[in-house]
Amino acid sequence: MSDNKSIEVASNSIRKMWEKHGIKEPMRFLGFCLSMLPIPGIQQAGMALDRHLGDKAFNSQLEELWAEISKANELVGKVGTLEEAIQEIAKTIESFPELEAKTKQFIASLSKSQKEFTVLTEDHSYQELRNSIVHADISAFVAKDGSTNVIQDSTVNSEKTHLHATGNSKNFVDGTTFQGNLGGVSMQGITTQGPISVQGSGIGFGAGGSISFGGNPNEVSGNCPN
Image (cartoon, rainbow, N blue to C red):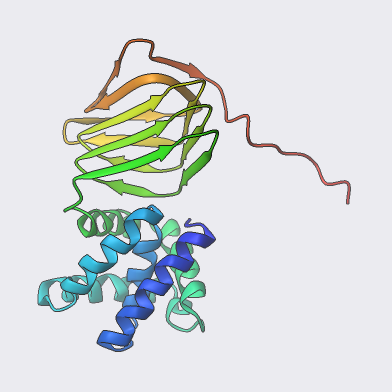
């Protein structure tokens, strides 16, 4: 499911479309689709959506998906806010595998024009990519100078993905699939250092590159005494 920040950014993008095109219920589903993208890609995808709204084939596909979702859960059209609607849509799609598959295809088409997607984390900083779908020709996750990237429960659709960590930095990957046209690689509880590339169904190691098993040490859990 999308995180609160992604939902907020996606909802604001849809409200701008409502101001221009009028309020239409199926746009609630577009809000969910945008919320599944990494925050840096939401604005770009939103601009592309704005252009697609005048296309009859696009609107027909949107109406068809919205009808299926509404039939599965009538609350998606009844809750008062966009943010609540996005959360209801997420619950619905997670419960119906066929709807989930159709939605993933639809989301991939929203950002198909994107050539590169890059996450750069440096100077002892920390970034997370969770419950997201990235669709680009090339993706790169770079951590420098004691920094950390976390990629969790996500799908990266790219022909080539670079995982690069230098200067005592690390990339933590869990529950994530790197998918290309000729195959995919799934990673569970993996830590990468140095230059690593994922292409098709294979992994390449650059000089000093390594992969090890181990969870993200930045996550802490405990039992509440109350």
